[in-house]
Length: 590
Image (cartoon, rainbow, N blue to C red; front, side):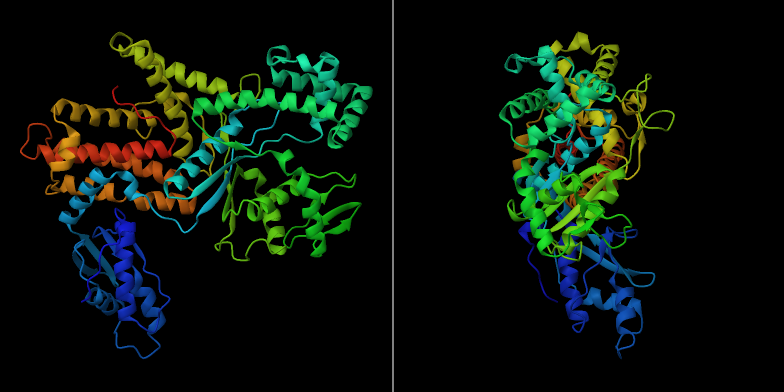
């Protein structure tokens, strides 16, 4: 039996640590099959199970093996498993599953170490060093609406999880700041404000309204339409007067976006469509030199296998479009920013566009043919936010719902619920306001993140602000309750961390301890599958495990008080890290 030393990198990641052990065992058991990866997952009859025996048997049974079936392969894997302080026992179940029971002493020690060294020691390590997450991406001169909610919230959470996993993340806001609509906006601006230098946000007022009025004039007034079309040519030709007006409109819009991002606590670096303009011609030239670009009906296109219509990269009027900008942005991110993983967040309606330009990039040799090899790209699509009628969520007057209105209402409803519970008498106005914001915005985010992003969800303030069930309100209450238990003990929790010991003797203590130790592998899974709902599910089950523990194990005043207070603190720390990764602000008293 070999002995293996615990890997510092894998602290707090039992699944990874067991994979290391079983990797050694596999190489000793079947030395002629060196490419078999250990298959470890949470177990039904143990804490974890190794599922390699059946797959291995199907590979080796025709090769004159000594084994008589999957259970015998499983037994051999146990026999060759290096001794480790983390493993209490192993057994065979059914057709060769190897069940592993972890040592409660090792589990307790791992949690104690996290309490001393910090939760960041539990962060998973991904194989990628630098990633671009392209999310939110509203259009200039249009207000952010409910359609931007999912891209912004899911994108921020994916960026946070990757950053936690030691990946350098370039958070990119690919705003729509270029295109034909700017002709009509600039001409309308000149008509309303001949002296563009003096134009302020207040003067333009509602940019959304300004956009609508200019669009109406564009549709009804042929003379204005012609001027607008000429304005596009002048803008794209670099006319300083037109560029100045364009910059003004962008600035006003940007300031509006910034207010929303500030409220949501989302950080982004803007690199809009216009940023890539200087590079487009060279990129199209490179694609042409590789024989990818062909003439078709006056336009220049790339034919993509599996798609009837080609990808248009230069329109028949010589202008560029989304595909030319997106291909150029991808080229820039790969060659200039040296990103290994580029993740795009848009609704599922744009899936075909992404699949086409990803295929074009593969044809150009920018990306490997295998979509699991780095550098790689992923389109993270998501379903729609629906109203009660199961259609796209709109206001009663069939307008799209403004994002600021949703945030305001979430906060107002949250505040009303707190006042109803008499908190305005107990707390300062600042505390009431901050808590209402944390709970209201947290509820909005969690309702979006907890559903599998590939499906739509029905927007309901009543459901998301419910304090029962799988909601942020319930989870924030659960966290506040844990903080209250620790406060009521009167103990200095930081001192206890240094001197106290954890014992996982009761079944509920052990179940809670195991769930805490599955945090790192959950974050890793959520990153690799690009599914934030995996983390939400973990967080909800963590609060359920805590409730079971608290209802069957007395904490304050018990003989096991120190150990149980440390378990409370470990739970609160893991909950807070989950909240952080989901972009939710924790509350410490409710």
